[in-house]
Length: 108
Figure 1: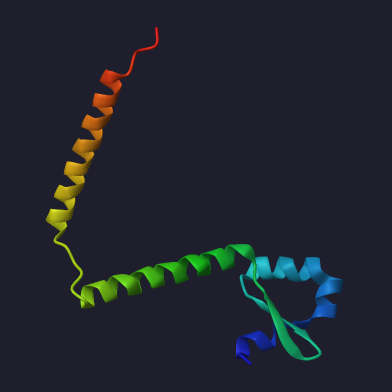
Figure 2: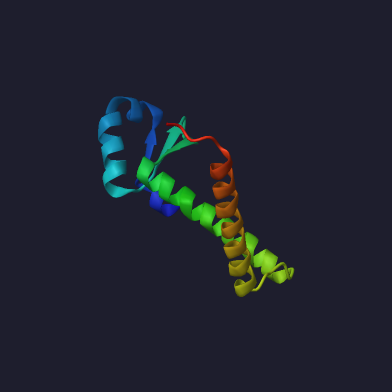
């Protein structure tokens, strides 16, 4: 078992009797609790803020890995080309909007 969890391992029965106290401590410390049943690990209790921060970090790491794989495979574009493409797309979008607005009847 991970050393840092040894001090933060509790039984389901203990969680049932001290839920408010344990949840408050998890929120205060940002550290998880390992929940056991008959000595076997069954679940982790993590405060929501820490959980969502960890999920965001994991998602960022995944996106970075995808980007690095694209670079390694040569799937890259020059920044100037990408910016030019964005500018052209924006101009087209604006002109299409203006065209639609000029064709639609105005409400009086």
